Image (cartoon, rainbow, N blue to C red; front, side, top):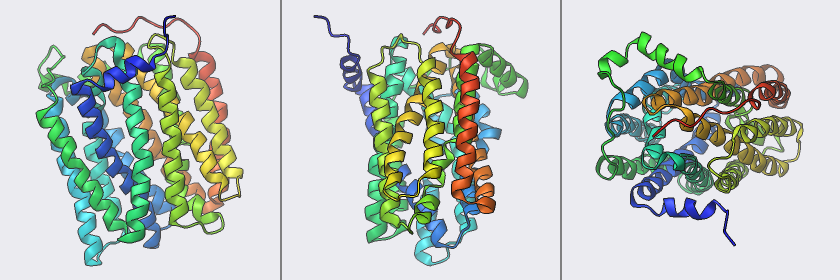
Length: 415
């Protein structure tokens, strides 16, 4: 009997030299990133920062997406993506190095952490479209959904390993250990981008300078959002990021509000969130590449809103990890399905711009949502703020999905 499972081809793709090496280097880099993501909000709280400053820190890291990610998409389409990544990742690597120095010197203050988050946000906005388009460039067009699902798998595996590493380092040597681990994790990824990945040719027909004007970028954006399937995917991700994803940003506030939970509960909750994300990504590997991803993304986005409502109503410390497992499953599967749809349908010459819009919806939405949730939390409390977010998310996603899930999909873009 023929085996219809998609797991076999997925594992064979992971065993290839170029994609497999890229996957491993990305895993190491993301482990360091998540170690810092756990240590940084806890460091801010230990320095006396308010929930609003916690939200402001997330906003500072995500806000540059609004101004620069579209430029980053144009860079991805018209420059060597390896060099774009290496340049901005090298600058970004200096930020955790500076944090370690400030902590060890005893001069660390909340505003310094926020400023360095802004630097990370700027470099992310300019380099992430290039990073996101590398995996599809290493595989055939029909393998793009599988490559994205595998990339999501390593990202969520790092969400398990990173917080676990952070918990060990914070309990033994303090937050500086987590920041140092993040700085070191950049090195293998930069080396892989330089010497293992192929030179990625420009796919645009015009010179970079001509395609980096505001008019040219706006024209490319109009081409991307012209397709209802892509527009629906972007709106679904944006709504999830504004209303649901802040539950992750404010996880330390939730933990502290429940019987004064400590850093161990916080790192555990973030780790199981990564475990849920890993389960969601593995589930997508069983989905056939040709299957319509719109219902998956839409209905799981609704489910994420329900999980946020339950997290707002929960008053049991050990109930939080359970809810965060569910949050990881639905958020990862929903966003990765939307990402696969965007990259499969976007023309190759516009794939970087399409990814920049996806990143704008995901990262920019999170920055706005974190800032707004932080303001509401300071006034009403964390549980009340998340309850409002979750109820709104369910209503908006149901309305969006009703229009988005219907209608025929356009044919995938040629390779």
